[in-house]
Amino acid sequence: MDTTTLLAQLDFSHNRLLAILDTIEKSGQPETKALSWRPAPGRAHIAWQAMHCAATHDRYLNVRLLNTTLKNEPVTSRFVSGTTPSDTDVPTFSTIRAEINARYADLRAYVAAATPALLATKMMIGTTERSVAESITLLAWHEAHHQGQIHLTWNLYKAAHGIA
Image (tube, rainbow, N blue to C red; front, side, top):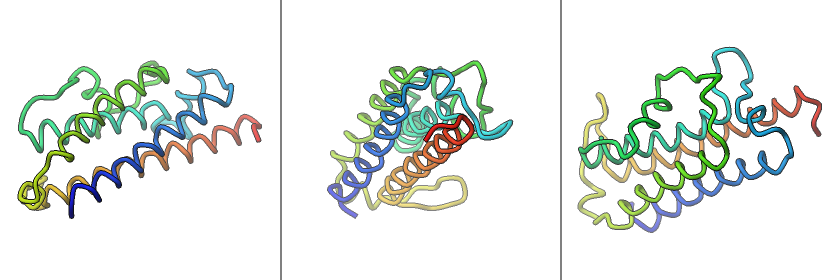
């Protein structure tokens, strides 16, 4: 896998995530009401899903790939896998976009500078061995997965609130 292909995957997923947030914001629904809506008790709300993408980029790039510390530990610790989405911790659209874009810019810069040798480097994630290139592909898939969950949650929100 080459950097051009990886960047195209990442950019596509990232732009789709930003586009669904734009759609929700332009709907005219109250920001906190739309972003905090969840399809069922204990399920993640729209804001959590989006911030989870930023948190995952931070943790994956900085901790797993660079073996350093998180760029934004206070935010990342609230939205990584295994955290419980809070009804009161609902970031605004501007906060979400700022965090998503900052963490994405770091990841994108890393991939843009990656050599073929680095991309081929194998690493262990838990009990699974992956190349760096496979890990980057997984991050693009992960963002697309959560964009899809946001899209579904938004459609359920509209149905629950009688919005066409």
